[in-house]
Length: 289
Image (cartoon, rainbow, N blue to C red; front, side, top):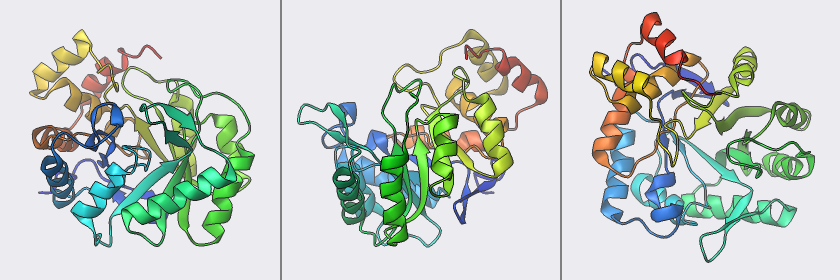
């Protein structure tokens, strides 16, 4: 039986993907900078994920920088026909591993071409515009200028679909006046649920929502209730947190990341966890919004 039997599928652009995907950020070195500590393990994790049924990989050329996409190409090229690789642009890395906005026409165009070259593609499946602001709470402001640049690159055939990352409801609506938006990637998990209303609105539009930091990011989710439930159902707390996201809404696509084969297996196994309404109700009490 497929590990995705219970998790199901959803449409991402014009492709059907398994809802349990893979996030490539942790394939880079510490601080998402430099090469991985174990290159062979990084390649093995990617190949194992795809062999297990993952057909949605989230990445960016500013992971590393460049290194994560190069590892994806080494591990998986030529790509399976059903594999959807989603990348993001809008930032660059300093030599000291710092993060800087890169949203000018020149910056975005260069980023798209860098992604194409490092991934070994003629066309990118989905490109998310990563808006800067605070990682835990996006900042308002017009995105018309940078999003229009990506829309033009889409018209040129370099990009198939567009999405947004770290965006507000107002910004999503503004983007939709420029070009179709097929996914939104924001900070959301069992504890941080400020996007509840947005998720419901996107569900109604058939747009995918991809939570980043699904397990809490650099400060993993910790909760007595979560640990108790995990113990009751015989899963780890992080598996339960992932299963809760899958149960939250049919348009949620998960991209937990790891550079460890055992952790990959644990993450993927969360897709098989059936969540009762009672367990879900108990988990809903954890939210701190």
